[in-house]
Length: 402
Ligand code: NDP
Image (cartoon, rainbow, N blue to C red; front, side, top):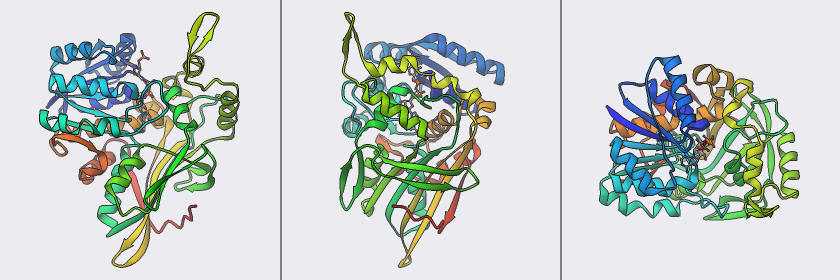
């Protein structure tokens, strides 16, 4: 049905390429492009070996709009699936507008020199995409992504009005390293060290990073973990699109070793984003740290355990208060067997493929810039079940969250 260009050949790009290749009737022609073409070629070779399918590869610097436009004009894809870094969102959106191509990403724009992410920059493209007759789908990963769709689905089918939302992201996996990040280390550390913001009574309340945590027991014997409150980008769009929410929070699990290393690295300045002059060479500490840390795309073979990501929603149905938990559990080694990646990349890459599928099949296609929760959740939820991310709902789960 459609030709797609995937940009970014990291952990997530690898999963998106595998999952799109599994659906030849939908993704009839696939090109994988990135800054380092050899990474695209290695993924293409894996897909050829495991699925017998050919995908094309290309080199592109996604910071460079004319270079992107030239590639888009040459390939003429239906859409771009952007799984490069958040720094490239706006240049890729500009190129899509110029070349008349639809757009999808998994993380909102973040300027390289400010550790700050918000939707304002991308929401500002609303009129341009509408006028061009193009669609941009924002945040089609797991969180953001599936968590937004979970919220929309629960609000639609279980409540008359939703009042609180707790998004809980547990990674019960172990890769055996004292310190490594499960996705791009620079993006991960910028996110985790940022001040916390949560929504309460009509405004965002700011608290120090990692200053509140509680214990959470996952269903399906995934285990009990300490979860820490932090800011995550989907809170911004969800409180806008569900104005009845009185409180919305995001929680993520971290192990003792991860937190201790992060504290020490922060204390000695290794997580800084300002350039420093070292022996006559400018280096950005966090970029140097990324260079030293294990590449997340190499964690697949050694990561065991499960992820459990979901939303606890409270509200009113037929005048009575109620609580519903929707969640998805994924085993790291199952992901590795299927697409040679760990579950963090898998749980991001599958919703990116499904978001693209929704657009290609016309189920979600509409002009303008959209967040996931603004679109009807049902077909997306059904596709999660069919494409490797089955989910469950528990009514009255009995959680007492802070
Ligand atoms: P990686 O660092 O593993 O991969 C990023 C890829 O983008 C690399 O192939 C890199 O190329 C490429 N890239 C970087 N800069 C450019 C550029 N200027 N031009 C072309 N290609 C470029 O990251 P991940 O795969 O872990 O993450 C990908 C995206 O997914 C990120 O935006 C991340 O925030 C998002 N994400 C979203 C999640 C969600 O649930 N919503 C969860 C996890 C991640 P090179 O190899 O040359 O460096």
